[in-house]
Image (cartoon, rainbow, N blue to C red):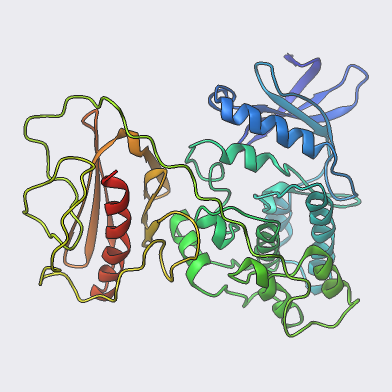
Length: 430
């Protein structure tokens, strides 16, 4: 059997966004959960520094509802983290085996998770990936795993579901939009966990991109939640972080210490948004073909006009007659403009999605993602036929990748175009 950091590895317990989790033992026989970082993460100096700071903070988390950090190697190869091993199934496994919880068990689960978040937030940490798979149903009550580690994973450009973006279906709107988050994002996830424990899904089924889209735009489905808890869960799932209750307020609501208020108690302060640094433009891009494909032109120019050189400001003109009528374009983001942050467009149907922001372009088809930073992108084109919008990314190395979205209605297609054009115009003209 393999030894890692002096611990004897017995067997693999699972694999997540950070890497592989093993059951291991100290030389004295105590069991630990040993989490070993993926090689591509360990090779990233940004991840290494973030991992070091998150582990340092995580050591301070106490309380009855977490798995304490007992050891770590934040400088070696491989990077690893050891926490106390908590025997028991995950909440996801328990729900699969036993079915939905009734109201008393939902209240007990919510109160235990609220206490865990109190401990985590008091140390300046935000979990960022609270979900049934990260909750162990131990004999003495639920335990929350992997607090703080999601922030270290988010520091990379990984795109696999459950790593760079957390877990769709439990992500708060500010996370889905790529904004900075506070502990209010964990309260949002707790609300989604309670919906799942009640036998429902807050945002239905579908692709990760579709789930994120609905979490930002649509009300949650609370039909499975007992009526006595519906208002509490709805408060957790409020779109605005400041409208969600704190874990302490949740404890009052779930344990009957205070009557449900008309508005959430002790709301979180508004999230502080820090715009990401501008993408780097290659100083010496590879030689392009003598007749490159047409570059993206904003809707104001239409198609067929002579393409400008890459990263030059496009000329503004009248909207072509064949484009469906649309409201004035939002300056960035999808839906109502947000007051801070960098321009972003997120488009999704039931099977596919496109995200364009300061970091680059992400395409998703049937759960598979392809992520391209701006310094790799030569051109981005968007075309439509009928109610279908196609976004094509052309790389400096000659690679071509396309994603087709079905708007189903001309009005939605028009909205997509007016959201996408200003963002592409912003980043392609740098």
